Image (cartoon, rainbow, N blue to C red; front, side, top):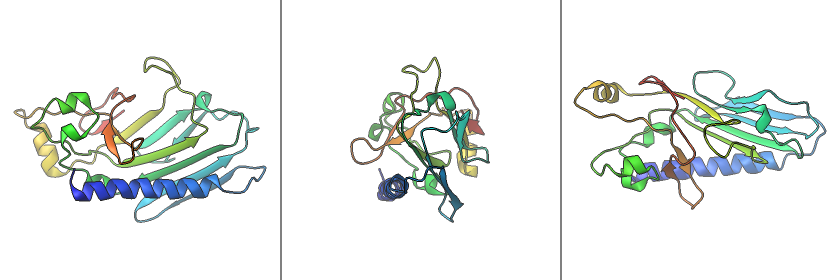
Length: 199
């Protein structure tokens, strides 16, 4: 992993942690607290909902645009306050290029030692507590849906459309469970799309 990618990953982790800490420690008002906004670096949403709220059909972040994460309402646990922090990074994906497959937790990619991996879409981070109740397998619901519009450079698009190149698109995320961020596809399946988007 390049030094720039390492620092970008650490920055993502730090911003996520600080934003989560702020939201988690917001006062216990009897109503929903929502803070949303945008900066040159990222769009953000901080939500704290009391447990007595009526069922929410779904939570989508960000509310607008072609790249988003959607959590179905049946995945919410209404027994406690629900805290949700969402960050949509505008340009962080540009730092994740030339990723070595052996440095990932993507088995299919790791098998190709001479291949290179790069992020083809924006980075979106969504943290929810208590954790949503999701299906234990990827063939039933409720599942989190991620829809990402690809951000290919002209060179990347040219390489991807070149018939002599073999291109694979993965659903992947930065897994911070072991400290530093490692690209992983565990629990994530690319269900549809083309060179313009993935679901």
